[in-house]
Image (cartoon, rainbow, N blue to C red):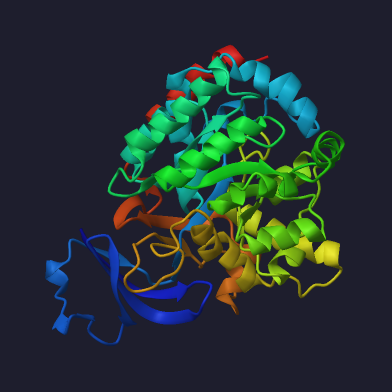
Length: 437
């Protein structure tokens, strides 16, 4: 499919370019040029009549699609079901008991609901860890979204249950890694050091090495988790994973709220990709991650929403804004994480974190076309002195008009094109009846 976005302002973590045309061919950003000049690709003028679709970008900004680097997508089923609780109680008394009744069809339909929500708020790629991930993969394939998927592994030992968890995760790699025209990749996801025994963690490490995939895990999310790790193991969760050589493979580590200087040095040394989840961490009172300390020593820090059961939405615009505001409060320095850095965290840092940095994350010729258009002629965004500031501090998802993933338009003028939104909403209402208290 060929698309031209005409007369648009390009905004990403690198620069701002006003009055430009953007040409997409075969899913790739083929050319970017000032709109006063004809677009040239391989020295040939592109005739508009040869373009399948032309999008009018006047009055809009185009930016790289957000990357939600850590979520549990189908947990939108539990949105608002168990609020205002600390993490341990929330998990053990509320979420885990009701998840025992979870069914594959529920995961599929609520994955579609979550994808629809993400598209509407400008997300084009995400990293997901949950159950029945074949159903999530099916939803991703049908919707046109890009994703890094992983089966959550919870097992204390490599017994019958542990072997089943590992086998399920391995099968997902075989069945889905690299599928959907490369839009789906698969990781291994031992839930956390405190829910997976040593042998399970070592098994996931060995499989990740042999399969060439990432590991996605929760790490040092709460003070209690770290305290228990010192009591049981004599070291922090970060140091424990390093001692097991898990950092020998690419690691996507969600949270990292309670990390000390030694932990941060280990994360930097091993190029661990950290995902900051400000809203979930705040809502569960887990704390505020030391993002500035991590970034100061070279740790790549991306952003994620976590699941909608602890957020309660999947809106990366909100995560981006809260991430910078919380860091300003903790450092008592208003210059901490300026708007352009927050945008990088939500786009190119996220793409790097989930292993697609060469494909997405910036508006660059040769990269895949994962692009979002936003109407800036809104009362909350005028008079538009600084487009990046507007995007980070003022914008909301209602202003997003068009979303392109891998060169396919998945939302056009506010209408989803790959998801039957009304049918998905109806199924969500139907399937949630049994969970109502």
